Length: 351
Image (cartoon, rainbow, N blue to C red):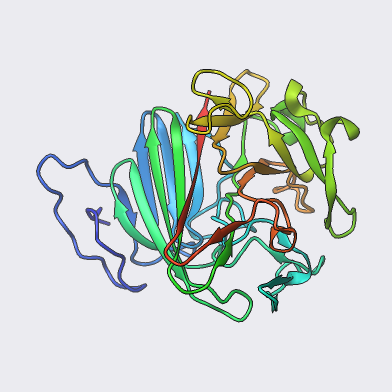
């Protein structure tokens, strides 16, 4: 199959995109596969500085990410239906809306329940959407999707995402703009399943500078309230201890953001600040994920599954704009007026 150059948009499934020659001096193109369309959607392959990322159109999903051939996230095949939410973009809310019900401006809304066993609306409305690949260069790709109003979410959002490889790894930037009327509640997150190296989650020390976690009910994971991480055995990951057989499916907050001058804490709001989570393998190699203050929460999940091939093979680290059930609590919920936009980004780096 020939490798087409960047295209302005992706044609309907089953057709071949037009070939557009790059301008003189423009960067080389990524490998863009749209015909025949793989099960997971149009594919873009990015490469730079030892990194290789493969993006799938369905869910704008990070399907694979490697550094010098080493997996940094749990991969899946292009012609495979994505396992759960692994690597997809989550919007217009991350995590759960309890019972799928919430109220805005005196109107009660009911969302589809896709977490049937617990009776919740999970991870938004765009993770199975077929996003349009708009640009594909050697180390940078962008995609977009318009979320139309529906019974459960009656707002129009124009969503876009940029994936870019650099010396520091893969940076993902997602932007949502209210393209309709009314104030739209909004949140976003990614759910990459990080891989430190050989072994499984139990074998890897995990570091997360979080002082609090969100307590949830055991049966339905309904939020109860925040607690100091020291209140629960094993939940203080500030020391970077091994995960062992600990079960985690909880949101963490009160993150220690570090400003550009190395100051811990809130610092100057005008300065860029980041927080970094680290997963380390026995050989000393590993992977980090870092993000800014626009993502004050992070869900951590040990990916416990009944299938041996999927059980605890990667640690889900999901920086979030808001906690679970923010559509009801209002905690850190983004409210987009017509025309307003919100942007969040995160970076995955090998070491």
